Length: 88
Image 1 (tube, rainbow, N blue to C red):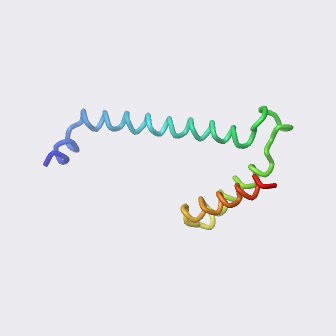
Image 2 (cartoon, rainbow, N blue to C red):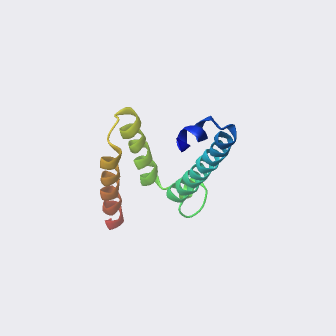
């Protein structure tokens, strides 16, 4: 009964919409920050570009968006790839 009352209340809907927007903004900001840290580990220029990282980002986009691979499986594969790159 309490959940049904909150779904009909416009104040709760607005509050939840603001919270959702804030969470999406934080996730987007974190995405940009981590992408910059991955692709440009030293400085933000083409000379400092991490080509192996860029390659793996492209492969990941293809595997997850085009081929529709399982996310958990892909995280495991990415971890193995990262360990192999760290050992080189």
